[in-house]
Image (cartoon, rainbow over all chains, first blue to last red; front, side):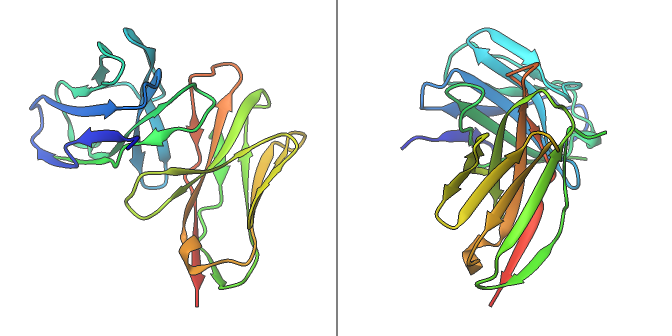
Length: 112
Length: 111
C-alpha cells in the first residue's frame, strides 16, 4: 500500500530535549516536505527536499533541521524544542512539486 | 498579506444543497492550484487540481479566475460525508518547490 508513515503520532516532551520525528514514504517520490498546522494559520511549510541531499527552507524553518540521506526518509529534528513549537506536524511526498501530495497521518507534538 | 486567504466558515448547509467556496491568492504569478479536503485531526487529501479551463469531478467543480486571482469550489447535492475542512493550495511560479495553504473553510452538512 502506497503511504507516508510518520512516527510518533503523539509526543509530549520538555523544553530543550532534542527529538526527531521520522517520515518514510514507499512511493519512490523525489519531493518531500514538512508542515506545521496551527489554528487559524493553516499549514505552513517548514522545510522541503527535492531529492537526496537536496533540502531547502520553507517559510518557518527556525528551530528545525532536516536531512535527506535516503530517498524514502525525511526526518524532522528539533534540537532544542520550545513551547512555541507545540503543533500538529505533517510530512508529505509527491512525484513532483506540482502534483498530488500524499500526507502522513500527522504528529501531534506538545512541548512543556 | 497572506499568500492565500479563505473564509473560515463554518458553512452550515442542509443535505442536497449546493455550496460554493472561494479562495483568493496574492501572487499573480502563481502556477498550480489545488483543493484538498481535511477531516478533523486527520491528514489532508487531494480533492482536485484546478486547471485554467476549470474541471469537474462528479458533484465537485473547480474554477480558476486569474484576472481576479481566485479559485472556487462548487459542491452540488451535498452529502453528510462532505462535512470537512476544504483547503486551498497555491504553488507559485517563482518557486515551484513552495506551497501555500489557506487556513481552510469548514463545511457542515446537516440532515
